[in-house]
Amino acid sequence: MKSIRTFFLKLLSCFFIFSMFSCKIFISRNPSVEWRSNKLFEYCVALDYYDNVASKEKLKCWINWTMIKNYNAPRHKRVHAYSRMNDLMAGMP
Image (cartoon, rainbow, N blue to C red; front, side):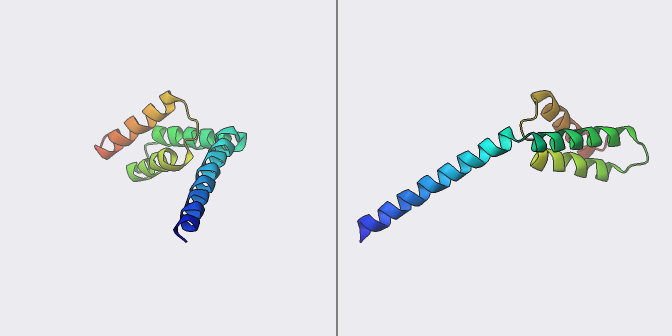
């Protein structure tokens, strides 16, 4: 009985690892996801140029991009996003 349970747990773990790997391949190879990521990044950069937009809204945009939409983003974009988040949290415009 214990060996059957162990077998099914190993089988389940293999399935989980395979599904995570295949999901990562799908996300990394999907141009639509990268296109949306680039568009949201451009939108957040554009928000930074408007003085009439609240800092809270700008921060929400950068948090959304860094937490959800930065699939395969180049390093310079990620660094820019995190530095903008730090600036906005510190109260800088």
